[in-house]
Length: 212
Image (tube, rainbow, N blue to C red; front, side, top):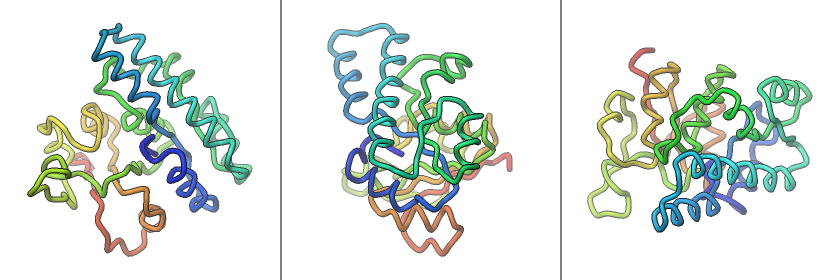
């Protein structure tokens, strides 16, 4: 769940999913954006910007959880499975599991997109990225002539210098053998349709893993 949706749109989306079997990983939103801004101005170490950006994710996870009676914070994969078994939705605090396993190099190429892919791989779960745009475009969607890409092979994404997902995600999808859906989380019914394999006659992007 993109931090760009927080707070209202993220809470609305989460509410719509309360009867689903899923897990939430939420981005760092404006907190992480501020860290990125400060880093551009002063240039901190990659280790500290990586760690504090993940701390931002933890903050938004706790704030989101505060608004959801059907959810519970999870610090480990085992806790997440236990929470799910109790018919609640786990919201992942990612900092501890990432410190323990260090699955990524520390850089701005890694955001909550890649972290969600890592968690999905540990759970053998479907990966869906809910963001504030309809999917992946041929260029910046704010520019004239930008076109939504309905479906794309993950290997083609390796050549993209910029898109609505982070730069590390395509290589991780290949490594983990995952497909991925990128959908506008401002429309909860779209997210529900993809989760439930219903008719998806709306705009979104499906990233197909060429190794499937």
